[in-house]
Length: 239
Image (cartoon, rainbow, N blue to C red; front, side, top):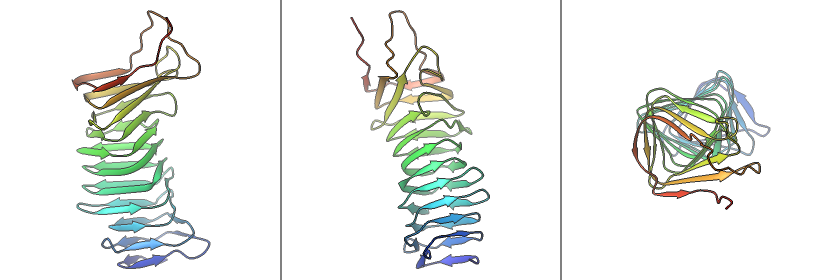
């Protein structure tokens, strides 16, 4: 494809294709449809919807700007070397996002489930409304605000937030205990600045582990803390 501006419908041909040039979606009626997948090694930007599965390959990028909303109805894979950028915009991953590349956000909202095993860079306040998991650390001085659910790592892990983290009243933080070693056997959050707690903390045992009296688990390492979890679910322990 050549560089395209889409104001109506662009249909992916049978068999799918890899686009090396740019596509700009202009306005919510703009959409990309079809029965087969689309891959990008160039930029995709603007406002509208992508209604096919999408792979952002090395060198490719997706961008949403101020006041824009870009919706993906199928699975999106951001491969190593790919970028997804949000600047004061909204990204809807209705089919889920598998992030293996770079996710860069400035004052943006991310809807849908996200698995983060690449990099995440934050500036300003960024809200995640779906189920977020994965081992990626959160760099940048911004805030990650969770209003859905968050599960650090791929079971278990220590995840670092270089800025702030906040859990809304509707959020659930899931943590796993499978031993006495942080990061390798139980989950841990490390927050360089401020952690704001609210919502539900759900702690579960994994791998048949049973804590013994006197064992300590440092689930949080934070510089500053505000608030507290409204509901705390802890595993039942033997008498």
